[in-house]
Amino acid sequence: MTSGHGVHRDLAWALKQQAQRAGEQAPSVRGADWRLATVTTVGAGTVTADGIVCRCLASYAAPTVGDVAVISQSSSGNWIALNRLASSGTPLFTPVYRYKPADTPRATATLSDDPDLTCPLDAGAVYRVEFTLHYAAIDLVSGSPAGRFRTQWTVPAGTTGFRSAAGADQGQILSGTAGGQGRWGVHQFGTACTYGDRNDNTLLCVAVEESTVFTTTAGTVALQWAQAVTNATPTFLAQGSVLRVTRIG
Image 1 (cartoon, one colour):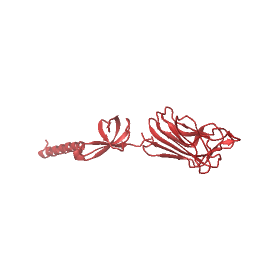
Image 2 (cartoon, helix red, strand yellow):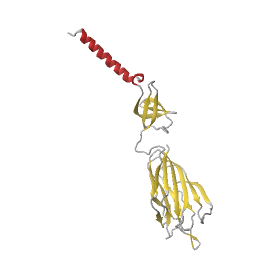
Image 3 (spheres, one colour):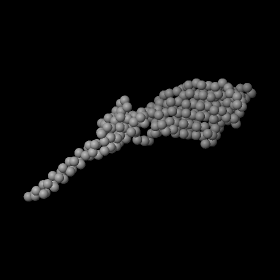
Image 4 (tube, rainbow, N blue to C red):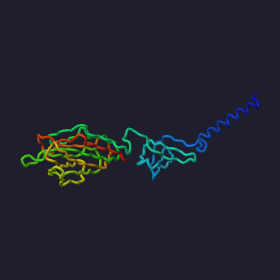
């Protein structure tokens, strides 16, 4: 036979457990909290993650279905999405740099990827890609074109966008501090662009190429380059040339 004291203890224990469970579920009792959740829907300034509608912080740019996001609830019950977790993909808004540690000479007109200025890209992403190129080449031998510097890009299959090409125009021979005619075109990634030079493969010129790149598949972006006209005197892409890649979406 259960005593009155025993019934009271059992009832008190049951009430304590019920209050604890209620407190665990009530934001006003447990206070602010955070968790991980998978985004299933993207709205206007909101995401739905694991069935919870959350307003995004301004720093959570371009949310995507499938993101594993950090979401947090206030003590009043409101939910916010702080950001996605880092993944094997490139972090957003963090530049990745590649640079040339030494000069690369080429005495061929066959375009190929530079060994240093190359970077992997994720699928379904948006990147800013910028090349700053220091190069040197000869331009004429007995009045005929020779050497020069020519570029195009390698990009993943299905990538869309255009690249700009700014530098000395082809056929320009720059001297000392004098300027010259420039090229300012916007081209397909696979369109070859030829630049002018200083007619001496020990004197450097600069070219800048950039693009906003929209990928559909993963792959590599790389600068392809070669001479425009094959000559035994090599064209150089110089130490310190830089590729900067920033994922922005």
